[in-house]
Amino acid sequence: MTYLRKILPGFGVVLLAVAVLLWFFPARWAVALIAPQLHGMQLRQVSGSVWQGQAGQWRDRNGHDLGHVQWQLSRRALWGDVRLQLDIEGPQLDFSGSMRRVSSDTYDWRNVQARVVLGAAWQGWLATIGQPRGEIHLSVDRALLQSGWPMDLQGTARWRNASIQGAGGEMVLGSWQVQAQARDGWIKAQFHNEDDGPLRGNGQMQGNLLGWRLQATLQPHDPDRALRQWLHRWGTIDAGGTVHVDRRGGLAL
Image 1 (cartoon, rainbow, N blue to C red):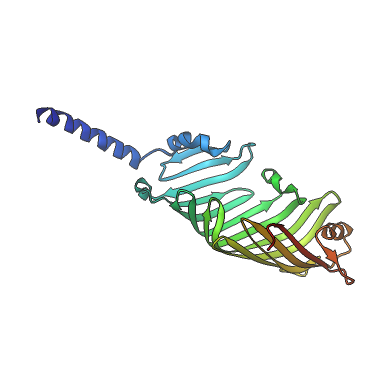
Image 2: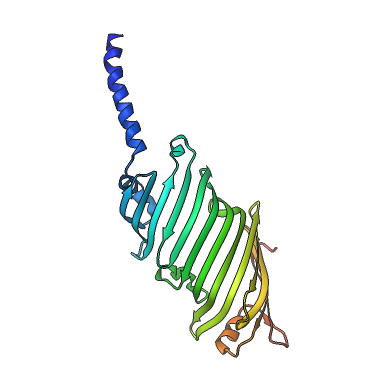
């Protein structure tokens, strides 16, 4: 008993110190700990705590500046209930949304608003269809992601001043809207043009982890030869010049 009376006060002090450290854990320490999991991305000029902090610069693996980051992490995370509010403000990217971790591979995102300026250097992976230009504005009420795949989704995207920079020059597409829904991992999206631009049309896309299908009717209203040639790669053309698209991949849908 005498021995316990001697060590218990010291043990209590250690527990208190650990609790205080966790409660006010500096954000720069946390960033240093998770650096190997950032896959080459960097958070610089970090300040605040792990619970409420910010990074003056967020850079991708190639050093491109993606913007200023702010976050609020609920202290419930200490008991496994991870809730995060994330805000990003940058020259080519704005993002705001709240996230709750449902399980180790499932995340529930709510009230997501985003703006992406296309054509930035960090978007090189989009060049497989030509280099997209314009701005995408995204509004998502809910996105339940399991291993990155949307199991449940309700959202809208607008592609404003859309264009594709291809080998033959810039192809102007106008402005387009997409409405997307997902249920039990099955995604459906409908899209159409929003203005009286050089390309009019509508279509839908559906798919899951096993396959996808894209159907669309596109009518160019512009003598742009590059645009017409690009559209011809996507489908068949009727006598009136309308392009009918019906493409699929994976298992047949």
